[in-house]
Length: 165
Image (cartoon, rainbow, N blue to C red):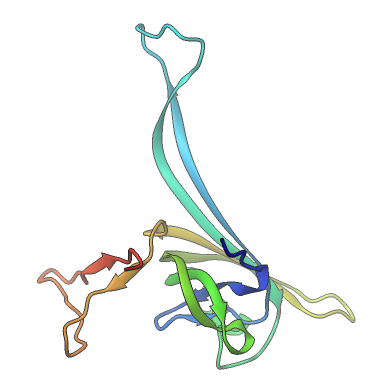
């Protein structure tokens, strides 16, 4: 078992995916919502629960930069409210900016951006991404031998689950 250090877990946004620049911390939250129910047949002392929905979100914070080659704070501000492709995984390469091992992928809305600019301190940001679908497994686009994506007649792009093989 290999341990992954925090600096190597990164959030990538967009298509093509680019790392969110100058991040200091990132956080993934997956939450299963349940609903309690009871019947006249219940005999135990424990409540019965059933799954209602699944929710997920990503949050990152870091230093404000103006690096146009990466997802800097300005480019993220331009996309607030938009649904974007998101990838979360182990990064490497220069500035930990290259995806090496994709853990999760999906679509999320950039739902909140906070920039803090305190006197005589580095400006910081916090970005909240609220998941809309597909976060529980990495998706990969199917491609033909000549690199054309497969699209259905009603406009959907076909995808497959990446099982690591």
